[in-house]
Each structure stands twice: as structure tokens, then as C-alpha cells.
Image (cartoon, rainbow, N blue to C red; front, side, top):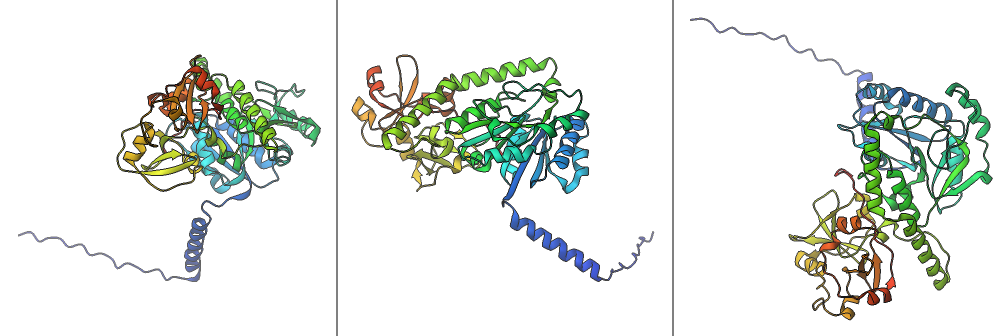
Amino acid sequence: MRKRSRTVRAPVRRTPRFGHSLGFDAGYGEGLRSGQDSFGTLFEGTSIIIPSFNQVDYLKQCIDSINDHTDLPYEIIVVDNASEDGTDKYLQRLGGQIRYRILERNRGFAGAVNIGMMMAKGNTILLLNNDTVVTDRWLNNMLDCINSDPTIGMVGPVTNYISGDQRIEVPYRNVAEMQGFAQAYNVQDRAKWQRTDRLTGFCLLFRRDLWERTGYLDEGYAVGNYEDDDYNIRVRLQGYSLVITRDTFIHHYGSVSMKALGERFMEVNDQNLQFYVEKWGNPHELVHRVKEMNRIHALESGGTEGLLPHGETIFFPQSVIVRGTRETLFWIENGIRRPIIGVIELPVVRLSQVDLRRWPIGEAIGSADAAARWHGYGHGGSVEGSEHALSMNGLTAVGADGSFYVVENGKRRRAASRATVEQWGLQLKPQAPLSADEISMLAEGFPIIAPVRVSAQL
């Protein structure tokens, strides 16, 4: 018989635990506890969010310029859209100098910014294109502007390359000469601040509380373009102003990532324009109408015009079913979200957690009760007769011009567009048998806008 071989293992040498080893373990443990305790805490500074895609050399210039020309507290958050040019290795080499996330796929400008906003810990948030170079006093001047008035929602600088009123003519011939020009230009001067109806997203500063009231960018805009116009409308609807800080200049190479699309650029741009038009219809008329309603209410109440309460949810319908990132469904009624107990077979609208949390939570409601209320039977009786319809929340009506209304608490609330109606599932709700005259006799309530499309993680 062959003898089975036996392996003899050397004894394991135990390394003595000297002072430096014990100190390392203690320090690591303390750092871990500190990180866990500070999770979710904010700091008095600005979170600079930079979405990136395949432009690592521009990204380096951008980050270097922030470090060289920013003397106020800030953090840099880079969200990379699955670049293939070594951006991931560059970010890893920076180590703890920045915070970053590398996505598994390209989620576009809106998707990357949304993740950055979710990561942000600053009391102010700044969206910045990766093809920008910032300058002396850039952040100081913009913060001075936004902190001067709580009704200023967002501010942005001027630059050499952009659409709209933020573009100025510049004398320099290259970036090497640019900083000298910017140093002379960026002299703080409040007289140069200009109210505007539109700010572009290449450099956009706002307070955290505005984000909490307004929510994320709409990811229905693929790749990029028009998501900033969309956000402008949502901010202005709440009563905020937009301001161009004309005492602040930064350099912009100009839509580098979008230009890299080549022949696809126009296709993407046209698709996003179509999405914008279908979502908003006539957004400027909508903003004007809300402003006029706010003015009339202030006159009647003896108060002053100001920001609308409850943030963007004031433009969401009642008597609908929503959910966040979890499976719990909520019935929305009278500004309260009520957890639904049981199974319900009705349209459910998914919202971000930021949107969902704006409604205070109330007591649970059974699925049968929620379904009855959704169908218009929740207050007893059938949906017959205009008098009964006026007392009902969530019933719908169509005006003579084809406009779609939701009847809530004796008021008519007009939907911004057909896309708004469909995204909330309002076309499936019972219609109140109201004539055009009866609709016009109802007091006007705030319009209804479409929910924002976000990924499942937000």
C-alpha cells in the first residue's frame, strides 16, 4: 500500500501587538464611528456637483480651477456617466480630495446631477459643467447675491459661451489670458444683478431648502438639454426669482459633451424639446397666471406676495395614489399622505423620496376606502349632479376648449398639459357632469403639473 503523504505546516508566528498597531486600530475605529455619526449631517458650505462624461482633461482643468480660486468652504462631488477615457482612474487618484461616484451606465446630465444632489451635504448647492474654468471671487459673488434675499431662488454668472442673456463678449484670446480678465471683471457690484426668466445649467447656485421644496431634475430629458429650463419653470412657479450675477464671470468651453454626440446631437435636442413642450404646454403663461393668483390673494388677505407654501406639492393633485422608493402605497388627500393597508388595483405614481416627504404622514387607510375615494364615492352617494360633484375631491372635468380640470374643494385646477393628465392617471378617474358654464363658475385653484421622472434609487 502506498502511504498517504502528510503535510507538516510551520507554526503561525504571532506578531506582538505593539503600541503603533494598537494605535492604528483605535484610530480606525474612531474614524469609523465618526463617519457613522456624521452621516446625513450638513456643513456651512457649498456642494459643487460636476457631472462628467468622457472629458477627463476638461474635468482636470475644472477641478484645479476650483481649488485655485475658491477660498470659501466647499466640497466637490463628481458623478461620472460611465466614461471610457480614464476618468475613473483620475478620480481614484484624487483620493479624499473629492467625493465621487462612477455610474455603471450613462444616465445623462439630469441623472448624474440627481445623484450628486442626493450626496450633497452643503447648505448651498452648485451645479457646474465639467468644461468650465472658475475664477477669482466667483463663488463669493454668487453667494452674496443669493443670500441677499430669501425670494431669490437661483443665480448664475455670465460667461463667454452660452445661449441667452448670460453670454458676454470677451477680449481674451485664450484661457491663459482669461484669468487676468476675470480678476478685473469680478468686482462685487450689486447694481449689476439682473432679474431674468431663464438661467442655464452650466453654473447654477441655489440653497438646499429650494432643492427640498422643488426636488430633482426631470430625467425624462435624455442625455442633456432642457432639464435646466424645466427646473427654471418649477422654481418660478413657487414665487422665486432668478438672477444673473453680472459681476461674476467664469469661462465655458461650451457644450463639449453634447458636441461629442456628433450627428446625434440634433436628434437628442429635438426629442428633449418635444418632451418639454408636451409636458408644459405654455409654461410662461402658467407662471404668469400663478403669479397673478398670488397677487390677488395677497390683496384680498391684506398680506404681501411671497413664496407659495408647501413647495412644489402645491401643484400636485389630491386624491391620487403614490409611492416612493419602497413598496408602501400612500393615499393623498387634504395635503396628507396616508399609508394604504391592503391590495389596490389602481394607477400608482412613483415619486422621489424628496417629493414624498413634503406631505406629512397621517393615519392609515384601507385599500377599499382608498379605492372608493379614488372613484369619487368616498364621501357617500354616487357621482351624480353638479352640486355633489363640487363637494368631491379628485373628480375631473373637460372644458369647452379641451382643457382638463380636476375639481377639488369647490375649485377648478387646470392640468398643465395632456402629458400631466396621463402621468398622474387622471384621465382614468370619473368625470364630473359639469357644463362649461359650471366649470367657469368654480373658483380657480393652483394648476397641476406633471410629476418628475427619476430613477428608482432616489
